Image 1 (cartoon, rainbow, N blue to C red):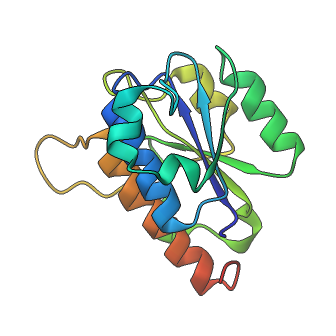
Image 2: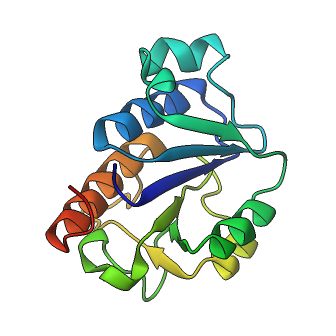
Length: 160
């Protein structure tokens, strides 16, 4: 397991959530935290897309609001990183050992990461964008970021 968890607030698509579970399991993440109206693995769309990964990785639904969870994770020693294109955002391969353990917060499919969550995060992570649209599906962005972070953590000797 890697010192990485993912926070999934207000993701509307059950299929995106199922894909996030599959990727989280494949990448060896510790936990998937669901918040707000994000569907849980009991939803048939999540289960259909997750293909059993929802049973292989720990998960919990943390209620309607993400900010209390962020504060709790900080209290547990996590660095909270919002995945959003912002000025000064780091690429996943730029994190340092001091950033572990890390909680990666995803954004909503349409609105991204809300301003209050960006303000509460310790840092922002962004994926380099080379096309015109500068936008990725949330589950795709998570997969790229998760594997970038896991690779960096392994290079830093933080995970096996």
